Length: 228
Image (cartoon, rainbow, N blue to C red; front, top):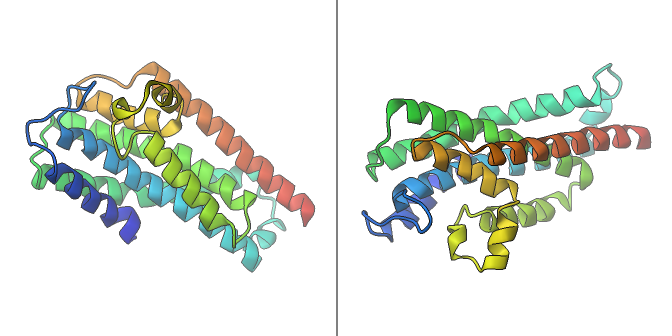
Protein backbone atom coordinates (compact mmCIF):
# COMPACT_ATOMS: atom_id res chain seq x y z
CA UNK A 1 0.00 0.00 0.00
CA UNK A 2 2.93 2.36 0.66
CA UNK A 3 4.37 1.92 -2.83
CA UNK A 4 1.00 2.17 -4.57
CA UNK A 5 -0.66 4.93 -2.52
CA UNK A 6 2.01 7.10 -0.86
CA UNK A 7 5.16 6.52 -2.90
CA UNK A 8 3.86 8.26 -6.09
CA UNK A 9 2.93 11.35 -4.05
CA UNK A 10 6.38 11.47 -2.47
CA UNK A 11 8.06 11.22 -5.88
CA UNK A 12 5.69 13.87 -7.22
CA UNK A 13 6.70 16.33 -4.49
CA UNK A 14 10.39 15.64 -5.06
CA UNK A 15 10.08 16.29 -8.80
CA UNK A 16 7.84 19.34 -8.56
CA UNK A 17 9.98 21.04 -5.92
CA UNK A 18 13.04 20.88 -8.15
CA UNK A 19 11.28 22.78 -10.95
CA UNK A 20 10.17 26.38 -11.27
CA UNK A 21 6.56 27.05 -10.33
CA UNK A 22 5.90 28.83 -13.64
CA UNK A 23 7.84 26.48 -15.91
CA UNK A 24 6.11 24.47 -18.61
CA UNK A 25 7.04 21.14 -20.10
CA UNK A 26 8.51 21.15 -23.61
CA UNK A 27 5.92 20.17 -26.19
CA UNK A 28 3.06 20.85 -23.77
CA UNK A 29 1.15 23.84 -22.43
CA UNK A 30 1.04 22.24 -18.98
CA UNK A 31 3.11 23.41 -16.04
CA UNK A 32 5.59 20.99 -14.58
CA UNK A 33 3.35 20.50 -11.53
CA UNK A 34 0.27 19.76 -13.64
CA UNK A 35 2.17 17.51 -16.05
CA UNK A 36 3.72 15.34 -13.35
CA UNK A 37 0.48 15.17 -11.40
CA UNK A 38 -0.91 13.02 -14.19
CA UNK A 39 2.36 11.13 -14.62
CA UNK A 40 2.59 10.18 -10.95
CA UNK A 41 -1.11 9.35 -10.66
CA UNK A 42 -0.65 7.03 -13.64
CA UNK A 43 2.54 5.64 -12.13
CA UNK A 44 0.76 4.90 -8.84
CA UNK A 45 -2.10 3.15 -10.62
CA UNK A 46 0.41 1.16 -12.65
CA UNK A 47 2.18 0.11 -9.44
CA UNK A 48 -1.04 -1.04 -7.81
CA UNK A 49 -2.43 -3.13 -10.64
CA UNK A 50 0.74 -4.49 -12.26
CA UNK A 51 2.85 -5.35 -9.22
CA UNK A 52 -0.09 -6.42 -7.11
CA UNK A 53 -1.84 -8.61 -9.67
CA UNK A 54 1.19 -10.49 -10.98
CA UNK A 55 2.65 -11.44 -7.60
CA UNK A 56 -0.73 -12.23 -6.04
CA UNK A 57 -1.68 -14.61 -8.85
CA UNK A 58 1.72 -16.32 -8.83
CA UNK A 59 1.34 -16.94 -5.08
CA UNK A 60 -2.21 -18.21 -5.54
CA UNK A 61 -0.94 -20.71 -8.10
CA UNK A 62 1.72 -21.94 -5.69
CA UNK A 63 -0.75 -22.32 -2.83
CA UNK A 64 -3.21 -24.31 -4.95
CA UNK A 65 -6.03 -21.79 -4.86
CA UNK A 66 -6.23 -21.54 -8.64
CA UNK A 67 -6.37 -25.33 -8.82
CA UNK A 68 -9.49 -25.19 -6.66
CA UNK A 69 -11.07 -22.69 -9.03
CA UNK A 70 -10.58 -25.09 -11.91
CA UNK A 71 -13.02 -27.48 -10.22
CA UNK A 72 -15.75 -24.89 -10.71
CA UNK A 73 -17.50 -23.82 -13.91
CA UNK A 74 -15.66 -20.48 -13.93
CA UNK A 75 -14.47 -19.77 -17.51
CA UNK A 76 -11.08 -18.28 -18.20
CA UNK A 77 -12.36 -14.91 -19.39
CA UNK A 78 -14.52 -14.50 -16.27
CA UNK A 79 -11.52 -15.20 -14.04
CA UNK A 80 -9.40 -12.63 -15.86
CA UNK A 81 -12.12 -9.96 -15.79
CA UNK A 82 -12.71 -10.55 -12.08
CA UNK A 83 -8.99 -10.11 -11.34
CA UNK A 84 -8.91 -6.93 -13.42
CA UNK A 85 -11.95 -5.50 -11.62
CA UNK A 86 -10.52 -6.40 -8.22
CA UNK A 87 -7.24 -4.67 -8.99
CA UNK A 88 -9.06 -1.55 -10.16
CA UNK A 89 -10.42 -0.99 -6.66
CA UNK A 90 -6.90 -0.46 -5.32
CA UNK A 91 -6.01 2.15 -7.92
CA UNK A 92 -8.58 4.74 -6.90
CA UNK A 93 -6.96 5.73 -3.55
CA UNK A 94 -3.53 6.29 -5.12
CA UNK A 95 -5.01 8.48 -7.86
CA UNK A 96 -7.00 10.56 -5.40
CA UNK A 97 -4.05 11.00 -3.02
CA UNK A 98 -1.80 12.32 -5.81
CA UNK A 99 -4.53 14.73 -6.92
CA UNK A 100 -5.05 15.97 -3.35
CA UNK A 101 -1.33 16.54 -2.88
CA UNK A 102 -1.08 18.36 -6.20
CA UNK A 103 -4.00 20.63 -5.39
CA UNK A 104 -3.22 21.18 -1.72
CA UNK A 105 0.58 21.46 -1.78
CA UNK A 106 1.51 22.47 -5.32
CA UNK A 107 -1.55 24.57 -6.08
CA UNK A 108 -2.64 22.76 -9.24
CA UNK A 109 -6.03 24.12 -10.31
CA UNK A 110 -8.43 22.79 -12.92
CA UNK A 111 -12.18 22.93 -13.36
CA UNK A 112 -14.45 20.65 -11.30
CA UNK A 113 -15.42 18.62 -14.36
CA UNK A 114 -11.74 18.11 -15.17
CA UNK A 115 -11.03 16.60 -11.75
CA UNK A 116 -13.83 14.11 -12.31
CA UNK A 117 -12.74 13.40 -15.88
CA UNK A 118 -9.09 13.00 -14.86
CA UNK A 119 -10.02 10.51 -12.15
CA UNK A 120 -12.16 8.59 -14.62
CA UNK A 121 -9.62 8.34 -17.45
CA UNK A 122 -6.68 7.46 -15.19
CA UNK A 123 -8.77 4.86 -13.39
CA UNK A 124 -10.14 3.36 -16.62
CA UNK A 125 -6.72 3.31 -18.26
CA UNK A 126 -5.27 1.29 -15.39
CA UNK A 127 -7.38 -1.69 -16.49
CA UNK A 128 -4.95 -2.24 -19.36
CA UNK A 129 -2.10 -2.85 -16.93
CA UNK A 130 -4.27 -4.90 -14.61
CA UNK A 131 -4.76 -7.31 -17.52
CA UNK A 132 -1.00 -7.32 -18.11
CA UNK A 133 -0.47 -8.17 -14.45
CA UNK A 134 -2.77 -11.19 -14.73
CA UNK A 135 -0.89 -12.40 -17.80
CA UNK A 136 2.49 -12.08 -16.05
CA UNK A 137 1.13 -13.92 -13.02
CA UNK A 138 0.43 -16.94 -15.24
CA UNK A 139 3.53 -16.57 -17.34
CA UNK A 140 6.04 -16.69 -14.47
CA UNK A 141 6.35 -18.77 -11.33
CA UNK A 142 6.62 -17.43 -7.79
CA UNK A 143 10.40 -16.99 -7.84
CA UNK A 144 10.64 -15.30 -11.23
CA UNK A 145 7.51 -13.16 -11.18
CA UNK A 146 8.99 -10.27 -9.17
CA UNK A 147 12.11 -9.62 -11.30
CA UNK A 148 10.13 -10.02 -14.54
CA UNK A 149 7.44 -7.64 -13.32
CA UNK A 150 10.02 -5.11 -12.11
CA UNK A 151 11.76 -5.05 -15.49
CA UNK A 152 8.48 -4.52 -17.33
CA UNK A 153 7.26 -2.05 -14.70
CA UNK A 154 10.27 0.26 -14.77
CA UNK A 155 10.76 -0.17 -18.52
CA UNK A 156 7.21 0.94 -19.31
CA UNK A 157 7.32 3.74 -16.73
CA UNK A 158 10.57 5.29 -17.92
CA UNK A 159 10.22 4.76 -21.67
CA UNK A 160 6.54 5.75 -21.59
CA UNK A 161 7.37 9.16 -20.15
CA UNK A 162 6.01 8.81 -16.62
CA UNK A 163 9.31 9.76 -15.00
CA UNK A 164 10.42 12.34 -17.54
CA UNK A 165 8.87 13.93 -20.65
CA UNK A 166 9.51 11.94 -23.79
CA UNK A 167 10.49 15.20 -25.52
CA UNK A 168 13.84 14.86 -23.73
CA UNK A 169 14.48 11.52 -25.49
CA UNK A 170 16.40 11.09 -28.76
CA UNK A 171 14.18 11.09 -31.84
CA UNK A 172 14.40 7.32 -32.36
CA UNK A 173 13.41 6.68 -28.74
CA UNK A 174 10.53 9.14 -28.95
CA UNK A 175 9.16 7.16 -31.89
CA UNK A 176 9.25 3.95 -29.83
CA UNK A 177 7.70 5.65 -26.80
CA UNK A 178 4.64 6.75 -28.80
CA UNK A 179 3.66 3.12 -29.26
CA UNK A 180 3.95 2.14 -25.61
CA UNK A 181 0.77 1.83 -23.52
CA UNK A 182 2.16 4.00 -20.72
CA UNK A 183 2.70 6.90 -23.12
CA UNK A 184 -0.89 6.71 -24.36
CA UNK A 185 -2.08 6.23 -20.78
CA UNK A 186 -0.50 9.46 -19.52
CA UNK A 187 -1.64 11.28 -22.66
CA UNK A 188 -5.28 10.66 -21.73
CA UNK A 189 -5.03 12.75 -18.59
CA UNK A 190 -2.78 15.37 -20.16
CA UNK A 191 -5.37 15.99 -22.86
CA UNK A 192 -8.12 16.45 -20.26
CA UNK A 193 -5.88 18.77 -18.22
CA UNK A 194 -5.37 20.90 -21.31
CA UNK A 195 -9.16 21.29 -21.54
CA UNK A 196 -9.81 18.85 -24.37
CA UNK A 197 -10.83 15.24 -24.87
CA UNK A 198 -8.43 12.27 -25.02
CA UNK A 199 -7.03 11.72 -28.49
CA UNK A 200 -8.69 8.92 -30.43
CA UNK A 201 -5.33 7.38 -31.31
CA UNK A 202 -4.39 6.99 -27.65
CA UNK A 203 -7.76 5.45 -26.81
CA UNK A 204 -7.54 2.98 -29.71
CA UNK A 205 -3.98 2.02 -28.79
CA UNK A 206 -4.94 1.34 -25.17
CA UNK A 207 -7.99 -0.67 -26.22
CA UNK A 208 -5.80 -2.77 -28.50
CA UNK A 209 -3.33 -3.41 -25.69
CA UNK A 210 -6.19 -4.35 -23.36
CA UNK A 211 -7.53 -6.93 -25.83
CA UNK A 212 -4.04 -8.41 -26.29
CA UNK A 213 -3.23 -8.52 -22.57
CA UNK A 214 -6.64 -9.80 -21.46
CA UNK A 215 -6.75 -12.37 -24.27
CA UNK A 216 -3.24 -13.53 -23.43
CA UNK A 217 -4.12 -13.81 -19.74
CA UNK A 218 -7.21 -15.91 -20.50
CA UNK A 219 -5.22 -18.15 -22.81
CA UNK A 220 -2.49 -18.64 -20.19
CA UNK A 221 -5.16 -19.48 -17.61
CA UNK A 222 -6.59 -22.18 -19.88
CA UNK A 223 -3.10 -23.45 -20.72
CA UNK A 224 -2.27 -23.71 -17.04
CA UNK A 225 -5.50 -25.66 -16.54
CA UNK A 226 -4.51 -28.20 -19.21
CA UNK A 227 -1.12 -28.70 -17.55
CA UNK A 228 -2.84 -29.54 -14.31
